[in-house]
Length: 249
Image (cartoon, rainbow, N blue to C red; front, side):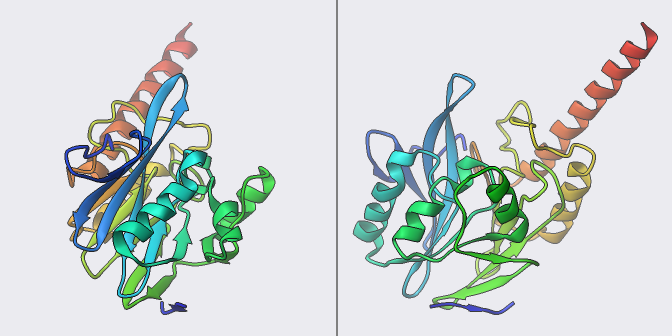
């Protein structure tokens, strides 16, 4: 089947939309961003995933956040591309990435996470992947290379990125903030001390990226990693000033 080889969102050109609960937008001839929605702190928030179309199958990066869209996404893939999903990779343990793992396991679709993500899901009684990888790994699916990359702790201790070297598409997931983001979002599991260093490493590693897809919001700009660092600097400065003010009381 495969071997180990080591937004806001673009609503202008959706491929498929079901009551605006699922939007699939073309990135290039073999890459499509899919967006589902859920509620966070009272707001309806879009969450991005990626579909990579290979010679004979489809790779899905992250699962829908909206649990009602697990099967509609599969139906849309079949209707549009006439190919089965042969691999699902979730990029960290939060439910906007892993909610559909158990569902796709039941469909006999191979699902993968890093070992760190698997352990966190297990601890939190969240859906588990059927397979894991310990280190950065490259899958070959239908002639397409799919490489995982752990930049270091950031949004979560287990966040990974997915790199498609054939056409230089980088799926950053929630490790990367969209350029229209005004804050860092959910920081419950974040490592603010390491995140800037991990962003710097990612910027050096993926200088040639043509597209960078964040977990939420627009992917129209290639400056999302730079913007993420800016938000981190602002947050850390704010934390420092707050701590200093508290000491002076």
